[in-house]
Length: 95
Image (cartoon, rainbow, N blue to C red):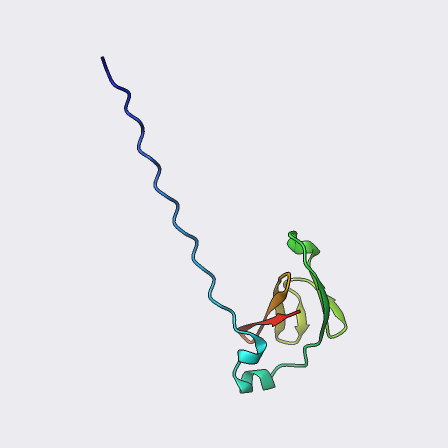
């Protein structure tokens, strides 16, 4: 009588690479901070749907991918902090 052989267990999926830590605005070098425009955040709206997220900064309503000022881009809006970039330097601002 033939015995049933269980198929081999699938290999575990590789773990997703952890995103590198994004420094806060205050952790940026002084010369980088000096080159940034004032960034006054007055509020934010977080949603699981990226298109519904908003950041109120410098009197503007911005969404992910939009520019705050020349060279300063809103990359990601989070529930308690947002990631911006300026001239290739990423940083986060808590709100």
